[in-house]
Image (cartoon, rainbow, N blue to C red; front, side, top):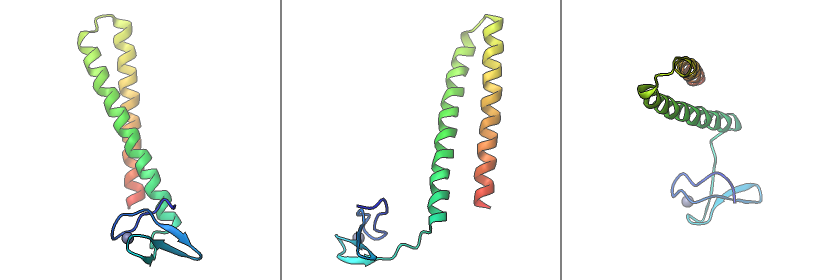
Length: 100
Ligand SMILES: [Zn+2]
């Protein structure tokens, strides 16, 4: 079984000799996706996931900040927040560069 799915029915495709074959449609499928596209798609997914994780962390730190009174902790949270925000900024720049 291949990682690609049939563009028509979404069934995972099989390699049959030199052809990529969909068992459900019972016909060969031409994959127009190049290796380069696949790499780009994968890295987009990774960037997207990283951004989501960072966003979730920022949300957590916001909640923690609300109740935090210790100055040292506040500085630590502030530093974390600042570095995560710049990480998100970099992630977004990377995504933009790739799509453009
Ligand atoms: Zn199919």
